[in-house]
Image (cartoon, rainbow, N blue to C red; front, side, top):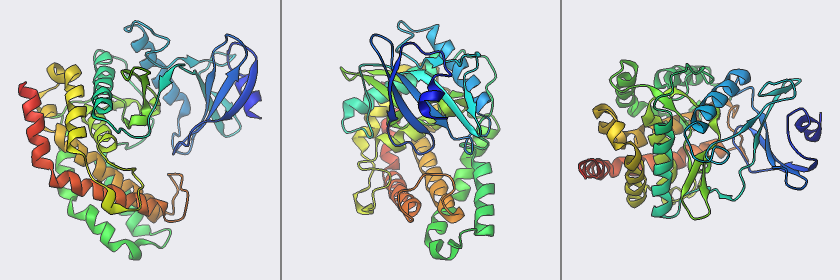
Length: 356
């Protein structure tokens, strides 16, 4: 079926004028649907069922979370996603092996590929803090839609398997990069054990908080979180860590000029300040203790994931050229090293903000 035929399977308003690609997502294929007159426009997305093997459960998670948020905010049509059901009432449409979902396009918003001002970083922190706060009393059970996502024990199992099988015959050529992972393995495992044993609590988390997954009002204030495919029960620190990985990098995550990569400590402070403006009073002592470390943890995980995908033959992330995942690996590693070099300063900033 064509995208125009697919969109007609959903309960949309208005006549469809145009369907065209939108953005360059790593995982899903996204299209914008333009309609006639006063009818809303829509986002049509083909969900990657190879990455998300249970799309129906994923959509159930998204609907449950967005409906919970809608009941709490002043403008439900703008302050979270509005998922559109199909003609038969489901929140996805299956066409052969393809799964499609639709939401209303929120008009009059800004989005960013990277944060380039401290004000923007601050607002991003506010946004994630607010998202978590709105879901603090969410009491439904969310499905596990991505096995092992941000689960370091699982990641290491998959990592060991990738090294052992060497499917693409690349292990010999990336020995130095493998050593980066192994030399930090115990530290990362020890941190993850605190999540496993409940010292660090499990909550509802977005789990993919890069800046492109936040929408902003035209005045620069934060509006809402989008791209909720990865919403699951997790630690709040995963949201913090992934946001820090995204917001504080002074360049792009696949910059091949590794000497350009660094963490901007001012962006770190701005994001954490915004986040704590919403969450300071509701975090546990253990969560506060590891706020700074969470940036290192998620950045390390991303180094591992990019390198593992390269070793496996580029089966997960979309690539633009054969060495793309290796470039991503090295670029993210440069960011990790920059975080490690500034870690004491990061910790002191968090302590000062918590005392303020």
